[in-house]
Amino acid sequence: MTGTNTENTIDALRRIYHSEQAVRVLFVCLGNICRSPAADGIMHDIVKREDEADRWIIDSAGTGGYHVGDLPDRRMRLHARQRGLDLNHRCRQVSESDFDDFDIVIGMDASNISNLRRIAPSPQAEAKIVPMSAFFAPSERYDHVPDPYYEGSEGFELVLDLLQDGCRRLFDTVRTNKRQQEYI
Image (cartoon, rainbow, N blue to C red):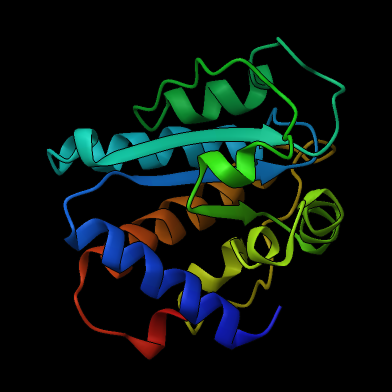
């Protein structure tokens, strides 16, 4: 994906937001048990705290169907709960129809992005795919959200740190009426 596609998608989100329509965001990782449900929970928390929950439709899914119907990983739920976040999402697999149902589809790493491109039913749908790292601070040393599944507590804490910062930057970027290059 080029930077221009990311910029165009973010500009489209701004237009939706400023036209008083709901912004529809889908977060995607491999199994929908760690990273994407955490991003989903964090984003829900942000929009609730900002009193904008009615302006955002937020969900998460996995590129694989390994955990459909399950709750997120218990370790991720524990670490999220320690930050005041409730991850009660039921895991699901991403589908072609998600590209119609959401304005932006955010992948956590290069493998997720590649899988999403294969699933996207059209070039217009593919243009909605943006890496989560597009919302990282310029000083951030990570270019993806690492999968904490085989890591210890530090891995889960790192993922939550990255996602809390990235989701906040996503929210602020969409809400602003002008392009802010430091966010993309």
